[in-house]
Length: 545
Image (tube, rainbow, N blue to C red):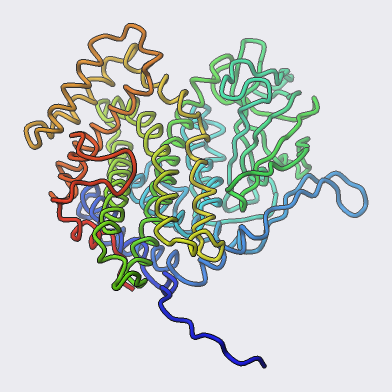
């Protein structure tokens, strides 16, 4: 054996063996704020259990394994029979099983269900983000299924189940199912009105066969998919099961899996329907867009939650590293400029978490006013939070220096994942135009937004000035499409500022209002006013292990 040439010192230990939920002060406070007192104790126990698992070395290893061994497509079995199956590493199934058993597909109709589920989704996604796709789709499909009560009676209980069953079998034989989605096509993308997949009615009411293709099919090993196709009366929503009631496989040809930038553990596919693909209509013929809008809104909120999870994990890793790593004569976390960077990242992460959890609480409330708020706040939050994710994760990676650029740190996987939620479920322009559409056609949405930010007026002069600025923008919607991004950004920032002023510690709200609303901050992270209590901001974000 060669003689030792060096001793390893000054390296941060891995951030494992901690409770992801309890250590996230902003998230734990949001759960306490938005849940009824009689639900709190059980929710805290459940979330802490999931938090300890998500922060464990074992589950973190599963996340590494699931991404190091991406899914593989098997179009045929050894005898030449077409099977169209996707093989996953066992770690994928362990991750998925843990999240389903934790109730992350069970929110609708459960007291406090959306807040509990959103917090759990944010926690589990920090261990591994890719498996959140089928979890999200299954959760979000429920509102669409309810457009067809007979169908919902069969599929909804299985979708809300806490049992993960990976084998493909008829829904009547399964204790739990997963649901996917196949909307977009290669010629149209987000413009689903241009879909060319055809749906031909059969003799039985509500039954059709489909012919066509889908350019993106999420989670292709799910038990069924919500699909848009052109029926005689126009674009219509359908449920396409993988296995039919008699146990035979539906015609569902997986042509290839997408080779993606990130999200490597999760399968996204191109699929073909050959004219014999059986489907059940969901909702009225010709009203497909209206039928799926509830699903779209729910998945967009999950994009916000997913980005908030990535941001929180990146910040936790950066603060942890800087707390243990010494350079230039002392711990990095004690260096004024590094402290400013970490504090700035922490403020951005907390603003994302607080906004996401407020929207989850609006789902639980279910009042007309809260529903109207969701109509404008969800696309605004989806636009802004998902866009802030990429630069935040990149800056957090830089806090680790060269160590952060190495795969073993886990930071490259976070960075590759960070653009996903901005692209999924409608990219930035789609979200900004959706905000404009709400402003033009749904007065209740604007009223709800103004009530929400108005609850914080008078508490911070910078927030008050920013609110007035938004009102000026809203007074003239002429030519608004060209400035839709600018308007959407300002709406999201004002909403975040109002929520932080009301609920966050004053040091957090002060930092946000100064840098994001008051102009006392730069374009890069690490440019907070030096007069702020930066140490307190960093300490709030620190994970104690």
